[in-house]
Length: 198
Length: 79
Image (cartoon, rainbow over all chains, first blue to last red; front, side, top):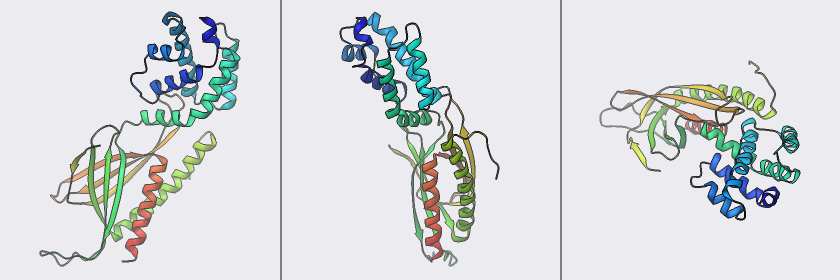
């Protein structure tokens, strides 16, 4: 029944289900499951376009990563549209995005990472050592164990060692990177456009 | 997660290169703005074979990676 769909009571649950399916990769959230759990009085024929509309709205908001001004403008426009949403529904969607935005963005960023990630890192320092073949191994070394792979797949592990002199150099390189990286990260956080070269 | 190739012997770090990129958009999200550090680590294995491994890191991961490096360096300095 149209009245059921216009209400906002079950909409919050519907948006959660949609987010799980569209962004967080949760399998098995079918339209029939959502209908029977949240809108049992509504027929599937009526429910389908409603679901598509809400999915479309949620995906538009997530894709544009709307801030709260953009969100308000967007939802206001949706309420004025023919076959759009009610102002109650707009309020529910707004509240949902505000509380789930960070998690949804994280999922979207993970989805766009296709190469292996660093899944684990451990290290130890070995002091002086000797061997039967060489008396020269007396330099302290750092041994790192890195675990790389993609989530849900087998991880690959490898170890490497670094002498003290080499590590100092690498640390310098890393600190150059950190400086540059902070610059980029601040641009990202503040939303300031453009790039600045150091 | 299962560990696949476990190498007992540690290889010698030969070189460590990095690349900083920002994914501006993707099909799933047109406004992504996701910074990502890619590292390429060249290692000489005990057998003599030289391998290059690449992996990506997010901002928090890189910050952790960097602070681990600093900790290793300062500990190594004391020896």
